[in-house]
Length: 309
Image (cartoon, rainbow, N blue to C red; front, top):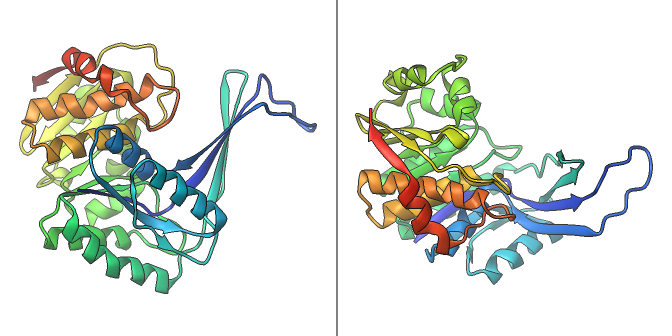
């Protein structure tokens, strides 16, 4: 069982317009509403890989009920904590070849709701082989909340795959937390180390620095340029195939899903790297966010090359 955590989920609403007209009425023919949030993208891809998934976080109100219904329909076990405030909407307007986003801040988590989650997390993590923690923290919770989750998982020897923004990662790593795997992209790496990243050699040197010591897996994704990966004391460069990307949004979440599933399946290092990164490529080939076609998996895996640095 893989436990996914999405503390600040959303109903993602997509409006598709030929053009966006300002200060007047825009009529929409195509509207898509999905259960959104980075951890729920991870959850969907895991289900498409036939993994058993428990999803948790916070849900509230009618929008929370919508998300609960949507994930239950596809076989994701709903273990979300119910809260007083309403779950947020996140709106994407697709127009003129561009994407304009309107993101609500989401609910404020009170002290009682925060403590309730920490209490039930002990129960959930006992059932899990792997835990993924994805995305931002809702209002009301400090970065120490993630520290507590990582500490609790360590108590049960359950690996944690953490995917959040670079500033939050900086705070977590500076405080000495050691997740099993982190997956910053190049921009997030720059936020972690407070440096401008200018070339591949700089990334390699940074991966050998103390802040990443004793983190078993550090996966630095580079978009279409593949990834540089630290596994314990070894470094690897992975090149992914060139594709005509349809929708790259959610590819990072799909990579987390791939590594979680691959770790559960006990894949060897290079095989795991190829499997994990292939999910990001597969997601970019699909129109829906957090979605893959498993029938294309072997073809993409075979096109990924991994070399030790």
